[in-house]
Image (cartoon, rainbow, N blue to C red; front, top):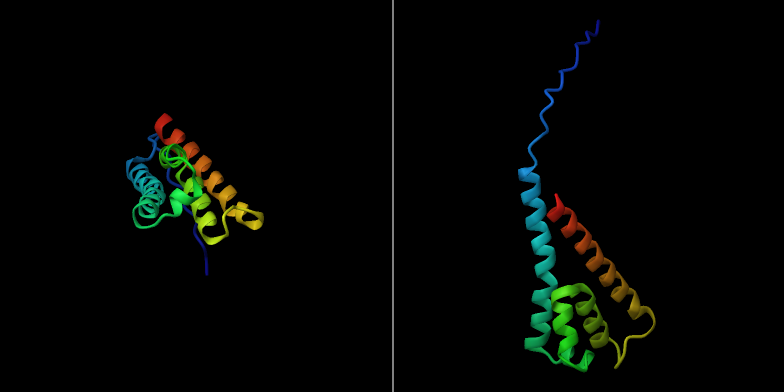
Length: 113
């Protein structure tokens, strides 16, 4: 049995089209941004957990726009715990903060491109 080797195809110098990949990334990024905002609205409409976690409406409103994962997870940890966020409950809040930062970095990379 003899193996034959052929020359690899030459590069054409043309970069691959990234439109399909960028569109999928934008749709996933949009869904990632939409999910916590819908959940925050549900907390506000169907329960008093958001009002209990935050003393004033301005903090959840700013969180809804700029840091939805952190706002959502803080209110959720407040709701499942007692009347404060203590101990291990800060871990999901920190994860939410990291998710918000990651989202902003990815958004900046897509917009700069």
